[in-house]
Length: 237
Image (tube, rainbow, N blue to C red; front, side, top):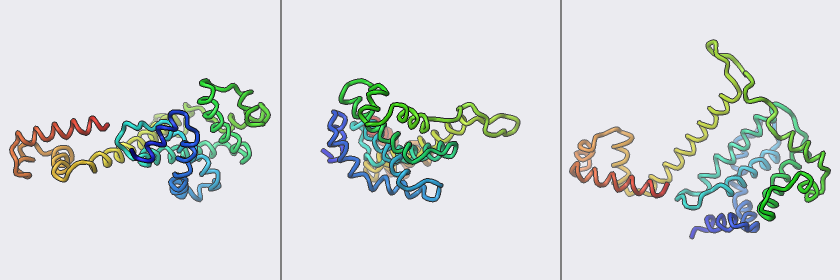
């Protein structure tokens, strides 16, 4: 079994040491993504902390049954978390100390949720972290969404464009990136002839007869092979 997958499975079973090791082993990945967002008005350390939250979310949500590299799945999660932070941070400036409290609160909340089997109360969270409840509430609220998703940000062709519309567009773009990365992972596992057949059928829009002529096989062989490849891909997805 792959080393990373084994650690993720242990993490999903509540092994905090396995999760900590995964974070440690992927520190370089987080920093690599953070570098893309330099000179955006935020400190590198802040971006790293936010990116680490994306990494933790990727660890918790990754499905080990998918035949996809963890890094392929984690990259858009980390990047998306940083983008949301930069978007929100542009609306209201939050002190570094409050950001650190909010970041720590996220980690502790995850830890207590697994340890106790329920969501910790705000008071329990504050006591565990050694901070005042009011300070914790302030930190969490400061990092929450501070603008209505329905606020009009500009008008185009007589129609109002809301913040929610722009966020949906961003999510769709990020989903498309993830889909392309997943597709590449799947196609890389096919043989040379299998990749050629899929390319001709679904990217070059060739008929099965045309594919057969190009590859030197019959239309029936193309049909059988195509069904076999699609079945294999569906099982991996």
